[in-house]
Image 1: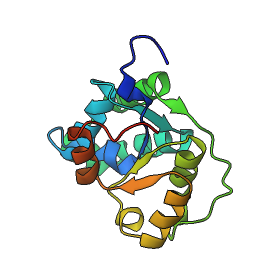
Image 2 (image 1 turned 30 degrees about the vertical axis):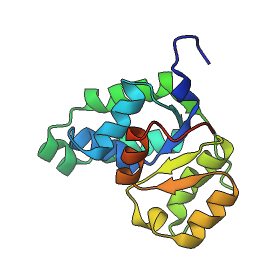
Image 3 (image 1 turned 90 degrees about the vertical axis):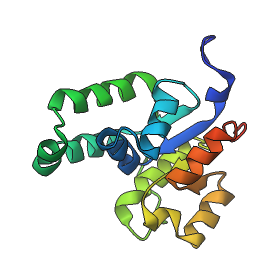
Image 4 (image 1 turned 135 degrees about the vertical axis):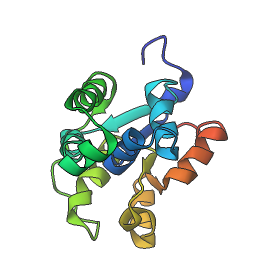
Length: 161
């Protein structure tokens, strides 16, 4: 860990792509608080993968999103560049199949392989699935919603991983 990194950055977190997109679209949202806790305050180490960044870029490029929220391609690429430079990168192997929505398995695998303590999501398929949450907890990962993770950050960061 670099010398200028706060001790709380030892906390390892995977942020679902929907949280990044929500943070970009609603700069005063709970999602924005979480992303800023990583990007600005360096409260935790972000674990990510190529699939996540590609999904963020794809969603922010949707014409209806670009028009409604005024998202410029340069803003989406700035987000990706920040992720490439500052996050810890994991390459999921595609060997995990735990989630009802198969397209979310890469996030679960990223969290497990990246030794994340938390997977933060706004996706009810992940947050409300008790069986999935129990299975990931056995592997050391706690799935939490946006409001829950904001509360964890406000309480002091969630402890060491």
